[in-house]
Figure 1 (cartoon, rainbow, N blue to C red):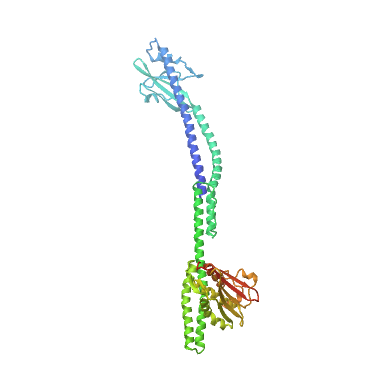
Figure 2 (cartoon, one colour):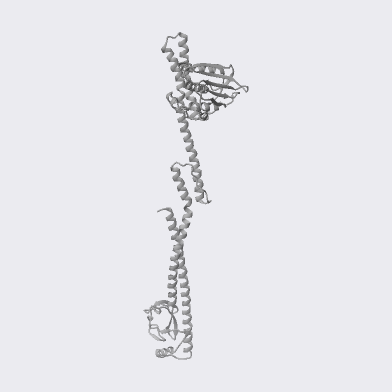
Length: 470
């Protein structure tokens, strides 16, 4: 059974039970009070009969029961517009006189009373009337007699039955009213639970931004506040998990993307060693580049993990020579550039700069690799660097490729966005290079901007501030 119906049935049952018990107690209490009044009136009549009988017998000598019967037969007592009926009986139950109570069993009451007591009983006669039968002991000489009288109390029972019938009709009307009111109250009370249930179902479907309105300060209101707090915490945790999963995915994609650049250098120098005769110095230089690129690849994997997955932002910056740094970086990709029939040169000033070398080398290699892919054979690529007045530096990669349309420039740094998708996929691009470069530049406290025009080539510029501060 649903909570709504449990609450409805409970409210109706408790209300009707309370009213039924209260009504029964009230009607029964009124009946008993009225019956007690009739009993008192019965005793008053009995006392009056005793008084009248005592007056009649005063100064007379009643020697035989026949004389007593004749005397009592002429006694009359009127009370409340009616004549009281009575009976005078002996201790053995013999009727000695009175106006007669033929419908009352002789000795039924007097046999149960002590000689010095009086009492009463309720009698139902065959005609259906209800009578109060009272009796009291009367001493006459050495003999104990019993004076009995009765009162008709049928009206009390008729009145009580009428009250019960009226109360039954009232209970029927009350049941309908309480039922309607309980439906309304149950609906109002359970509305917050319905809102909570609906919000819970939507959250189960993935809508974690669900919240419920807090409309009261009771337990249901507190439950709504707790639900909102739980939903907020859950949404925050899911967002953290989603961000962690995204960072891991980005790391996997970025690592797969970045590993190609050092592998290109390694493969290029290995190809030089395999494709022609080399002098010992050339062999040593090529092996040195292969070794350095392998070590850089090893260091780069760990730093990319910290940058993307762990979201680290406090990489230490070291002072390096801008010219030496750019020449070493350019030489790593020189075989691939010259192998694509491109003219390549490095133009850098001799000035100290603060960098995280492995990460910034990733930026430069990405920009050079993008320039290689965008420039047709016979074109040129330039890696340039110069100091700035504030102690920082500007690193630029310029190519003579086909350029980038103006409407595309605002999106080229978005993850997985590629201007020429067919060419990028054919050359193994993933659309992550510039997004990662921008992030690394921001980690250094700098900016990455690309200036380009269709048919006029492109210039990617990394501007870093000075002072060794990130």
